[in-house]
Image (cartoon, rainbow, N blue to C red; front, side, top):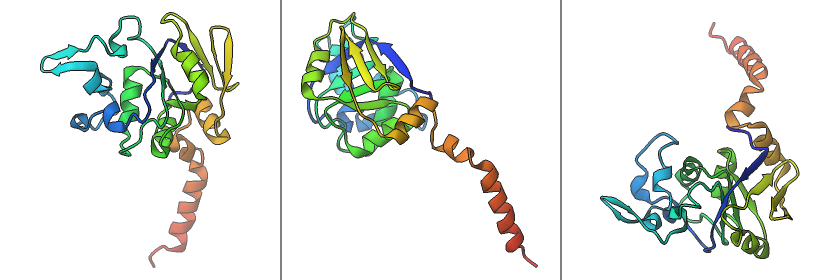
Length: 199
């Protein structure tokens, strides 16, 4: 997993509440086993006016030329409810987002995000509204070490569980964490095999 320490990038706001996983990534596009290739279909029903040929919806914020390279997504409350599919996180990652800032997340999406190196953090509505009003060329910095978002001379503090902060800062996924105990696991297996050896 890619480590997350400090990220600076452009932001884009979709200040809608209750955006669900099927709106983030429609189920019609869950036909891959890789974690990549989903970015094209992020918010598919909103980004495109037609699918064949794929015609951009010029009114959708991600299609605005000055917002296409945004890496910080600011949204409303209750983000990513519905299905437990991990693909929604993969689509956000593949598009280029490193951070999602919401009023709240579904529990499963929150866990999936952190396990995939996507920082999902919560801020009050007033803070998110200020971020949503930023000019497209205004840089936003998200500092996980200090747990603060900085933009336009202002700072917004956020909280995150110590365990997940440690894992994100170190780029530690479940496999990496398990392999840290490889010697102990192998020693246990050796003792187990000796004790239960067929005689």
